[in-house]
Length: 225
Image 1 (cartoon, rainbow, N blue to C red):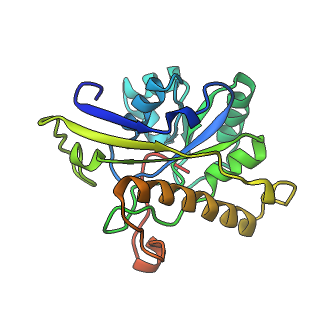
Image 2 (cartoon, rainbow, N blue to C red):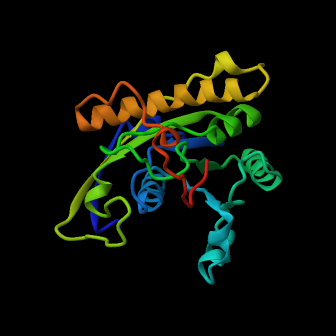
Image 3 (cartoon, rainbow, N blue to C red):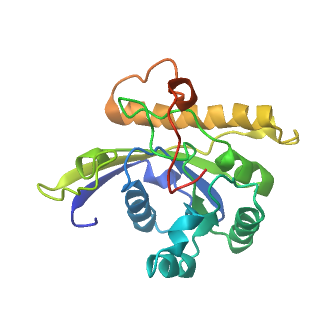
């Protein structure tokens, strides 16, 4: 990926070089985790991801995931499960970062705009008292289209990435982490991610965020929120 694509990173100085934090990017291609992994390495951090537990059962792949500190999440579960919570606590203790896709899966929006988010990213940030940093990327679809199994390396593609300021969640600190509070905080994070993507695309996102439940679409994916 490093040689197959050019990376144009905007506001990379906003990416925390030390300390634990949640990186929350948009998600529209199966290769997105590789993209954000490369970006994290380029900016000096070793990325960790929340990944579906089923992926850990794949020979060799599962071993690599475990050895590199990736975090399994049971299908149908959430970050409220004991293992993800314990893993998040270990990340804080070690001052590590974790990449969490708030959408939970590839966006279903027809034009690849961020859709409705899930609450895992903000739950980790609020429970662990760590920053959540929004990020957006654009151009990955030229390397691997949504739902495609084909990767196109040539001609060499350019992927633009923009890092945002940590999302201000101070209004939610001290409040009980009930569903309404988490959904409200998640909407703030999704607004920040969408704003970054608008800057990269130089266009405005739809006024109403895509909601798969309203379109009878099943939400699946390997990288959990």
